[in-house]
Image 1 (cartoon, rainbow, N blue to C red):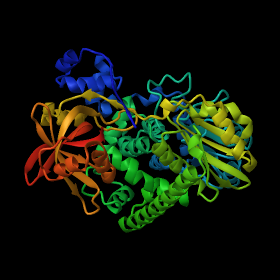
Image 2 (spheres, rainbow, N blue to C red; image 1 turned 60 degrees about the vertical axis):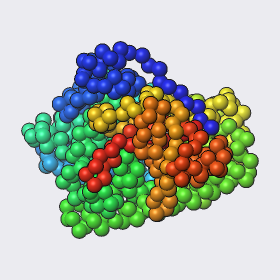
Image 3 (cartoon, rainbow, N blue to C red; image 1 turned 180 degrees about the vertical axis):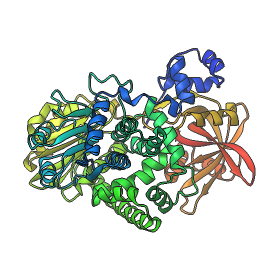
Image 4 (tube, one colour; image 1 turned 45 degrees about the vertical axis):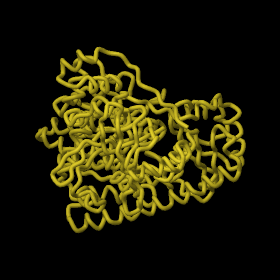
Length: 577
């Protein structure tokens, strides 16, 4: 069961359309994404790299660049300490290549997810000091490393922090700290990822070191890759970074990235945000999940095409293994939920002792999608239990967790996701307390589908479809638009694909417009729904292209189908009732 609602944000859509030379439907879509005011609309429609904000506005960016410049000139040893995910790997790559371009004596250390955990730690600091490192430069971490920073400075090292996570009350006493989320940072856009912050820092360093400014732009594709992979909001400057970076990614000069694109079978495709988020990005993440993120960094650093191809193949194999493990873990979690009666709980807590801890969050996300409830997946780890949670809009996960913080040895997160460690004996207590404390109601579990524009399919034109392409890249914060029409006559249904996993049909609008429609969801479920609602005989008529009594309301997205030099408008169905 789903609840369909129409977005009701108001504006003078005709005036906006006239001013910017766009369709009123496009104007409404832009308003639905909270883009208001002439400057913001202009940037949304036409923003390019000239619209990027001045990196010198980042608090401490110039100070950090000055310190690095001095260290480089004195040939002091600099160690970058990154993170094991897409953002950390790309940020590490940007800083390493940037500092080397300036002549720096620099290397990288990326923590091991299982052994070291997230971010800089005392073991890594001690190791750096023993190896004669003068300066530690963090990326995608460090904003919470108060004690670790103090330790490094007591050992005589310089500490430079670049991060994008939310600052806590007490900040590390670093020699320079660059993070747009700092309260007193004047940078106008706060939602940069770690790699984008690294890109900005290199822009400042290049200017100081007299490196041509256009060379820093070479890193834009990696900042874009990380922005998508770290699921940042595709709003404001992020959207420009991603739009410009994707253009570069489609003609990448990086041997490793090109090899990964080939290995994933995307060589002849236009690389879009979807491909980064769901095909290429997971391969980069697989290194940090199942082995070491240093593999992923080595791929980006590879110069030899043959070597890059070998590395890309290994990362793809790791990701395939990760997918298999995720599938098994998800199936095990579903079996436990249904067999142990956990569905009576409003907050699902699933204990999978043998699950690889790096997969807990992915499995939690899959379970959340299936049941539309907040989910925690817990697994054995060392001397206790570790877990990850994924939430729904009605449940602020970090806030709710904080109500029983005495149960954890460690926890953190935000409204939609969280992580925790706790003693094994506390697992049943954790489940019970979360469910006792929650104020969730049954209606909170009904998925809400927000329709942008109720639009007859007869209104669709190739010009409108072309305009919709301008709104890309789509992703978090700039979701793909959804259109809807009621009571469409369903005709000529066919099952396509070697796996019989696609439905093609014709839909007829009340104004007489007939269009092809595709459905890529659960084919059996779709047909069962028709039989249950309209009967087997009427459903069969649909497959025989005969007059029938089958009418559906559809949520869709329009596209152009090109076949043998013939272009036709079609719709892709996402939801039906």
